[in-house]
Length: 109
Length: 115
Image (cartoon, rainbow over all chains, first blue to last red; front, side):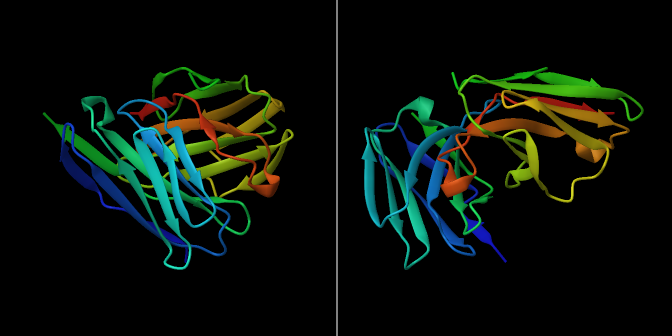
């Protein structure tokens, strides 16, 4: 079956760096997405990786290793507003999105 | 601001009621989706429409009935729901279905409570 695994919850300190991991098993692969979802709000698109390597976008970076079925989202210089759930999703060979359950990130002062 | 709007934002209904959720996208996309989000569970894809035609129905109970009158609007008609249907219902859109179609963009969701 198809599966996305990511930690349920993580805690980090304001100003620090945190890495949220995601491992996936899908039927084919057409890219991996990261979304941010604040409580009570819609998920918003953060990043897309389809080739191996690191994609940097300001304080956020996303990494992909297709051979390992692995990705991570790296958040630098954490701010209180980064407290949210982070969703990992893979697009399979039929271009269907397979979603993880999300990682709730708690930022402490 | 995502360009996808949903109404109502909150809905409380009894099991015998009939209600409808409305979604509108202002992004010129060709594909629209209904997702169900329950606490601590992955997003569940319910329905997919491409160019106003339904292309996916993930074994959703018939008490949920989608309607897509045009490429900008999507409805989810609800009747005789069960308490376990209480969840956040998210509408989303993407450019196309083929070739991945890019990321999906979500509306703010409707928080549904079934009593």
